[in-house]
Length: 381
Image (tube, rainbow, N blue to C red; front, top):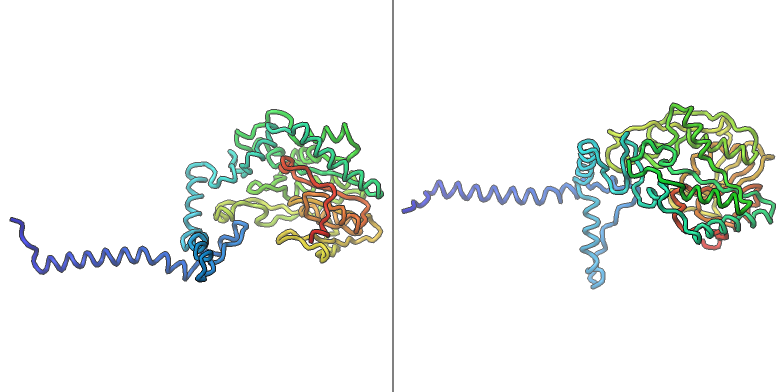
């Protein structure tokens, strides 16, 4: 026959139950309390995005129905332990397992980071060539922009910044190995054979600079060229446009640069050099934002006044590779307009009336639809 517990035993069991309940409530409540007291909202900005706002509360069917999903999205971003958990996850995968910690990037054998997007890999390898119709579309678009500029006495030049994987194939993962001509090769040959469009291929200049430089031309932890790579492209561009002899840039090393380290929450563990290159007369430049052509956040459209008012006037239409060229090219111009666009804004060009237009586009964007050769940016705003 089983003995009944005495009073001391029952008291002990009750104490254990209460402690278990208290531990459970503490485990459940501490994350919520800490999230309210110390939210991780600011960390999301290192991922190049804004955190979602707390959802609106109102006694309306539509608002109430959207509240759970909105609250879930908000709580995921402000959760107290979120940065630490992401950091531990990424560190274990990158340093412990030797694999990419994020689905958007691949990591090469030397620790270099590359975009893992299928289109990026395909256009680097040469496994996704233009179809005849696609190639015709690109050629026609650039020819149309060139013809429009020629009719107005404006020189037009197309420049495609190569992918980092194109310049540093030895640093890429095995699946990036090149198998044949690429879209950049196709477009280069088609423009040369079928049009009078000037196409500045900066790959030879970058290859030459790579062979003589002890510093990387692209950011190992990013996707863009750095000051050394931009300086090589600058020299080729200035010579082609005949804007005078290229200057020997002033170089400096700075921390940071284009890097995935912060986005991975590993900025204290992942480091790279950040060589900057500026024209010796950079300090004489005066930069203004274009009030009549406002840009998007982080992508302002600017006017840069050069030190010599008798120099030619330039419109540079480009993407995220263009800012590295501004401090090098602008001193060669009386005025240079730096426009963020993947198309050719003819109304901006018509308003400015430059001597030359440079249209720059990174190689990885050649898989997209061809640029609009007659975009009107001013009228759309």
